[in-house]
Length: 300
Image (cartoon, rainbow, N blue to C red; front, side, top):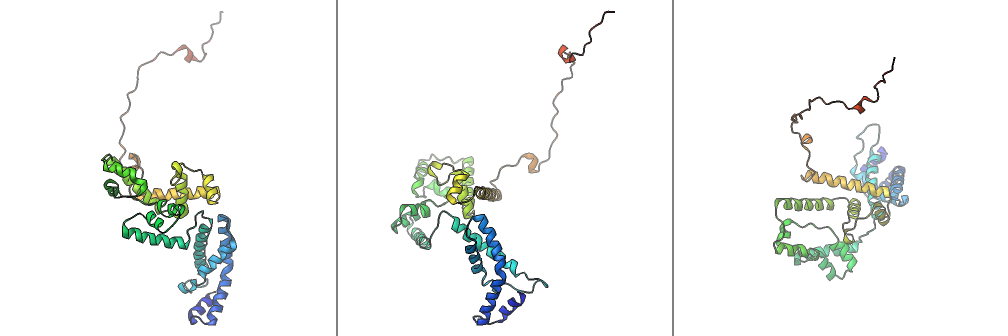
């Protein structure tokens, strides 16, 4: 394999010898990709052949970015290719198992709507409706997506989305609580929404469904229901939920919104406590405390 890598670096691009060497290198790497595809397919319940093809497509030109000869006596190229192939297989499995598929046509319409909304100062959902999208697509791409609102926009009423009309009326009437506790709560919510938006897609979908975000009346879903909707095992949903919550806690702790530590764990010196006064009086023992050990007198 090392000799093939050196040969590929010496051959001119596009020549027949280079293509034959690439095919031979792909044949040598294919058993490693087949094992990785089998492991990913068992975990995500997708076709192993499709994942193997995804791995081959992602690593067919990987030799151009690899420098051979770094470890004398062994070849590091299989490990390098295996890491790239696993990443491509995981992405393909997530797209295939996801319940929501965004097509290229929808992405183009969304980017066009974002540009129009930014230029005209209207919501993205309104720009999508002008393009003729149906209500479900508008909700999935515009109104149903996560968008954070700063406290300044909330207090000034600049947020013109339909679902925040009640909050804007409350702000205009001066009924919003602007105390320090309320400001801290709003900052925590804003940080939590931002951290939730930065989660990986599957973790974000699972966490949102389990806490009731985007559901009718905010009703929380069970792990079994989410597993049926996403066509995933319950154990995988539970694992995604744990990973998402762990990432959220780490992000919020880094921003200073984590739980307050007690005095002992915060690093303060532990001071001696005042001893409680003791009752040193003698108390008469009750008859029941003798445990029936009194001996009966015997007449001589």
